[in-house]
Length: 67
Image (cartoon, rainbow, N blue to C red):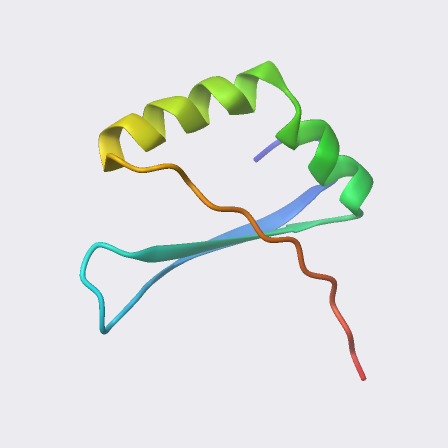
């Protein structure tokens, strides 16, 4: 939040697998996402989260398609 290009985010809890979540963030463009993803600040935050969860976070990038 508060980073260039960041629009919004939400966290969804999976109903059939306790402890599993999906975090969706929206960015103005993949350029801004890549800036954040490559930042040292994000890396440090993510390392702390991964240590708490006991596993590495997986990332996937999607693009909105209004059809």
